[in-house]
Length: 387
Image (cartoon, rainbow, N blue to C red; front, side, top):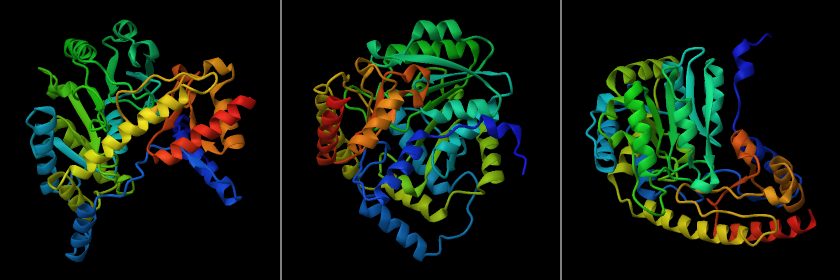
């Protein structure tokens, strides 16, 4: 069977590859400490699960509108007004099975072959993958440790042009935990307005902010009509397996993404959407308690990493990841990550899996218990001492 040429350009997400290899080692009897995947180890709050059960019992097992149930889109619109300070209507919202379709559909809808896309590097690998898939031109902007993994603004201003078809932002950021400053966001918005460039704002970690206040580029003057907000339920409500995300965008683009939903998944599962309504309208205390626990885990893992030989780690301001510098070990990051899995039983990711500017770093998720993190640090310390 001959594959289409475009399939050779489609990448993958290394976290799931490493997870599969770690699971294979577990089947061989190895005990593996999992820090490779950004999945909260908390259970979905009970009131959300109960809402899904009631929905199933009430017969919410049939097709719904491709753009999403009206009641969920109304609840999302209310939340966006509260968290971003902008008024949006349900027809500006598209609900998808997970948040990834928003980035895939947005790039598919806006980027032609040869169009340039600016995106963060190191960054979520699906950005690069989909840009390549549609034939776009990658324009990576380095995230620099010395600026808290903010945008290299000089490079950004040098590379943006009338050829730029889309700017991708992610703040708080995967894999570095960096957060764009208000000044950086303001300057990016100024340039986006000048050239009329749409911005895909990946804000999936907006609740995972440990200092300061969350800032969305969509909130700035003139940016609502240029911004596609990507958000979802996986992280904030520990609903990774439920597959529920959404995008907020100008109505003409929402119509196009709805057509892509119709042509691909038809609709997002109805009972899952009703659980999403319960998540947004119900008690938020468990979600905020989870975030506070992640803050403690962040401090534990950063302090522990900074005691390891050849490792230094800045304290991330957001998300659920640390991105320690391992250049002192004088080995390629993938080699170090493979060694730690094989020799220490610690599953984590190498920095270059997130782009060329991630080389020299590792990514560890602290979406695991403090006991698990402590065990990982002890094993890493013993293994690195033998490296």
